Amino acid sequence: MNNYETIQKECKFGIPSADQILFNRYYTIGYSYFLRQAKWALEIVNPATVYEFLDRHVEREDTFRPDFRIPVHFRADLIDFKRSGYDRGHLVPSANQRDIKIQNSETFLLSNMSPQLGGLNRYKWRELEEEVRKLDEKEDVYETYVVTGPIIDLTKPTKFIGVQEDDRERFREDYNDVDVTIPVPHKYFKSIMVENNRGKHFMWSFIMENKKETKPLEDYLVPTKEVELLAGIRLWDQLKGDHIEWEKSNVRNIW
Image 1 (cartoon, rainbow, N blue to C red):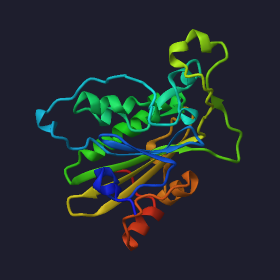
Image 2: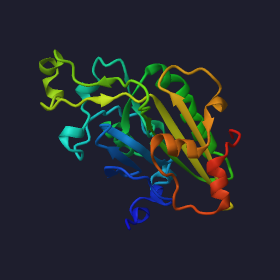
Image 3: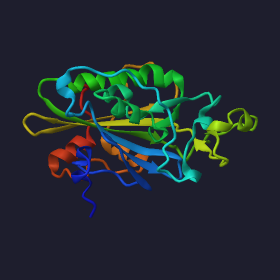
């Protein structure tokens, strides 16, 4: 048994399976070789660090770069997103990791990116990220754990992004001579689990299509079990009991 919780505190309640587990300083990625992107990304929102007493935040780093821990044939590179029509959408948001520069910079690894339409990434998805931070700021919330990832609907046609033929020479510095095609997710999920100051656990899960969304956030709430089914993962599997089963099977009102 791998005791990931002794390595990374965000893994305390378990992590889903993946082809490669990437431990960063303040979040963990489960990478899929088949999808050429993360299957899931796990974080504690605004994790406590030795620097938190400074009461300041660093600026957004914008240091987008490949993750060279991933084998080259399965790795996304900067050139793959050029002229693709899709944003390099963060799974772990930059704004959640802002105590020190290296912490924020690591959120710009391409292993933390997924091809997301700007109409989603810059609006409703950002709104959801902001609301999760507000949840974490509540007085009775001890810690907020979040898992985010893509959903590929195998019943629908799938688009792909990758290097454009005439970009190989134009952007030679970003090209590693290996063509990688990256499937564009049909949907994205974000599952939130809060531990409050009395040791109780509460869950919320959201699914949004990879398009411009305009409905209230409450309309995107789904049971956590639906996320598990559609994304092919198990969430918070170290938590046991009837209360946890209820949390996974039901939809709570948004906070």
